[in-house]
Image (cartoon, rainbow, N blue to C red; front, side):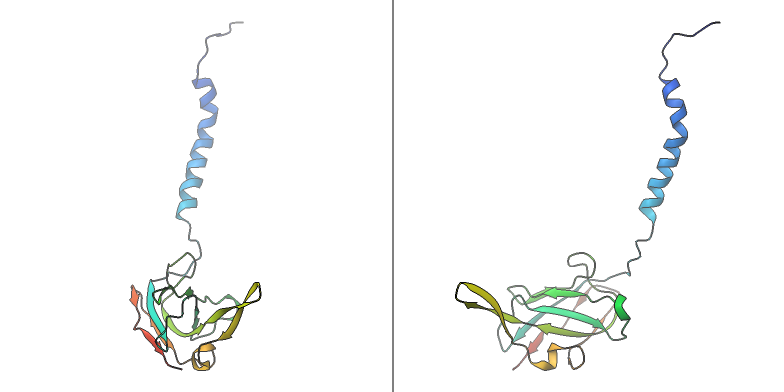
Length: 153
């Protein structure tokens, strides 16, 4: 019986070749799979309340056609300059196209002894809840720069 004692790297690599092909196919397929996300489009705007910037106020966009528990509700926090940029999946990515009723809630922080707590909502009720909000927005399938919202008390 003759044995080939010569070492060949191909003897180790050859059995692994089919697995490399399968691994490569999985990698390519994994990268191209749909993540199930609805396309979103950038949405930016500015807001002021009685001439004041509502820094830290929470803005939520509710779809005009309610979609139940799974509906997307893009949201944003108002920045120190009064601007905001909506987020749906990732920071500042935008919102799906469509019509929305938007709300804004702004509770200034109040110092109470050594603690801080949220004060009353400083936004008029006509912008504070989904059912009565006067703020209607249409998001186009393109970058959206909204008209500045000026709320008077």
